[in-house]
Length: 136
Picture 1 (spheres, rainbow, N blue to C red):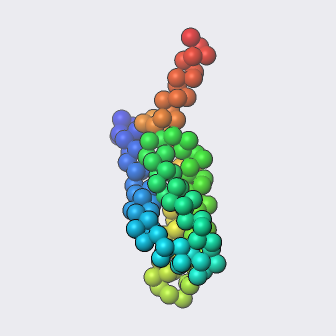
Picture 2: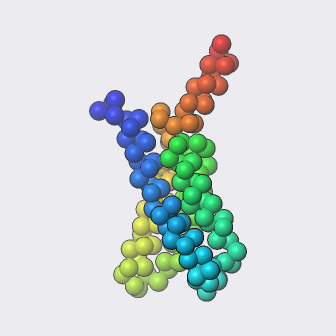
Picture 3: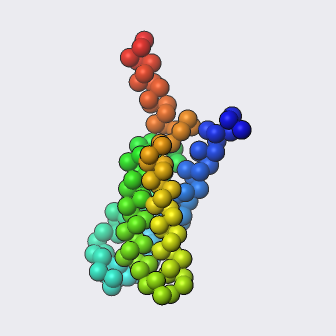
């Protein structure tokens, strides 16, 4: 099982962010509608490009394991904020489930931020390369 750990880490990173580019494509396809919805709940619609940057760029960073801890902490905050702002109608069962999904994802991102990307990552590769340069 130990030999599978690097692959499990890579698969886990892919799975935890898969929802974000999919959601980002939907937001981008209905850009003006998404901005209007954001405005309707008190979030400036002009922040949508930043959300899309995180959903696409941050997801890519997590998958390849580049600056993973920073991206993971950003996603944890994003997940909690979106839970509180967009899924706060907790009397509605679907909104309650969406709220809890976001809280659960934030927990996973906190763990990823704490423990890092693992062996199959650019973070691991660059750390080992830097060590080799200091030693050699």
